[in-house]
Image (cartoon, rainbow, N blue to C red; front, side, top):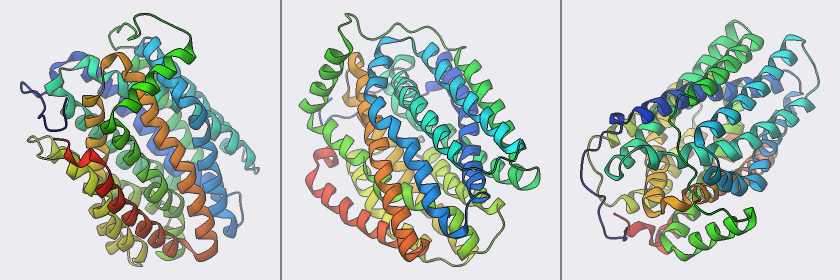
Length: 411
C-alpha cells in the first residue's frame, strides 16, 4: 500500500471471524495474568531489599526480563513463520504459567533472597520473544484487510483492559488483602487457562512455503524491512516508548505511591489501572470511524504525551496523579494501535512473522535502555525528577522523528 492510499473498504467488524473471537478471549485471559505480575513482582522485591535499593533492583529485574528478547526475538519471528501459531502460543503461555508457579512456591515458603527473581525474569523474557511475534503475526490470517485495523485496536483494547487495568488492579487488591502467595496463584491459574484457550484456534499453515536454513530466512526478512522506508520509520518510532516512557512509569510507580503520595500498596494497582483505563477508552473510541492521516497522528502522539508525563512526575496529590495518567492514555492508545496496524498493512503476509519479530525487537531492545536510565537517574535525583527529565527528552526526540520520518505521510 502506498503512503497516500487509504485502507480498503468493506465490512470492518473482526468479530465475524470465529478464530478472532477465540484469539481475543485467550489473549485477554493471558493478559490478566501478565497484569497481575506487573504489581506482584515489584511488591515481592520491595519486601526483600532495603528502601534505597528498590529502584535499582526493580530496574535490574526489568532489564533482565527484556534482555532475552534482544537476542531471541528475531529468531522468534522466524519461528512464527515456520510453526503453527496455535501450538506456538500454547507452549509459550504454558511456560509463562510454570514461571508464575515458581513464584507461588517462593512466596509461600517466604524465601528471603532476591536472586531467583532475575532468573525468572529472564525466563519470562525468553517466552515473550516467541509469543509476541506469533500472537501479533497471526491476526492478518484471521481477518480481512478492511477488518485488520479494528482487529488490532480491539485486540489491544482487550489486552490493555486486562493487562494494564483489570490485572494490575486485581493484583493490587488480592496481594494487599489476601497476600502475595494468593496473587501469584491467581496469576498462575489465569496463564494456564490462557494456554488452553489458545488451543481452540484454528490450524493455520506456516507462512514459509519453501524452507531454507534459519539464517537465510532471517536475512530475507531483514532485507525486506530495509527496502521499505515506511517500515523502517515505523520501527524507529517503536523504540520511543521503551526508552522514554515505559521506564519512568514501570520503575517509579511503586516509589511514587510510597514516597510521594504516601498511599498503601493497592494504589500501585489502581494507578497502573488508571493509565490502562485511559488507553482502553481511547482505543474503543478509535474503532467508531476510520481515522484521517493516521501516520501524522502516530508521529505526534509521543510529542503530545511528553507534557502529560511531566504533569504525572510533578504531581504530589492522588487526584492530579490519576488525572495525569488518564490523560496519558489517549496518545499512548494512538501510538500502540496505529503503529501496529500501519506496520501490518505495509507488510506482505509471507514475511509477517519476521517483521513482527523486528517490531518486537525494537520494543525489547529499547526497554533495557529506558529501565537502566530510569533506575540510575531515580537513584541519584529521585522518582519525580527522573520522570520529568525522561519526558522532556522524549518530547525532543519525538519532534526530531516527526520532521525526519516519512511515516507522517501514511494514510
